[in-house]
Image (cartoon, rainbow, N blue to C red; front, side, top):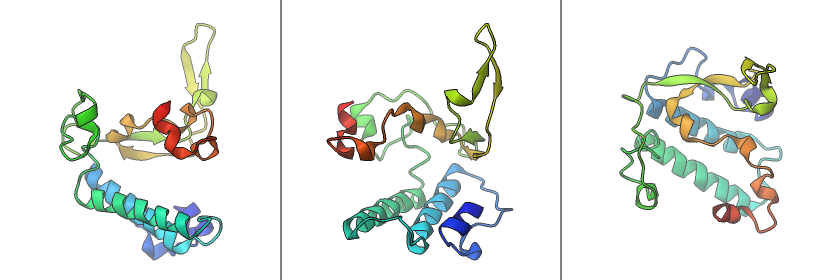
Length: 165
């Protein structure tokens, strides 16, 4: 959160305290949504490109916050998901983690580049844990960012082309 204070100019009192403990994935998602809204409110350097971009980012953050407050995000993508359109187009087979209080070590930057193998191709070390934190087990459904070879913003037909992959 130091990065949010330094780079986004978010006042410390707006952010959760460093001793804050979340007892459920839903609590964690609600706090995350509030921090994303705070970033949009306080960060004034290169966060938005235009009025439309700002509006889109606000609406996305507001909807995420609304879903978090309704406790919908912890069930998304699991068999218990009864509110989104995903169960209508996919056969969901994975149950939500028991209860909603399951958290695991998560690293946004963990990718093949950070894994050290021996001659038998066994993993012997995982390097660069700088961005590791405790996150809801539900994150296991999110594909890592590095699976994309090119950022969606740089796709020739735009970000809406993601469904054609």
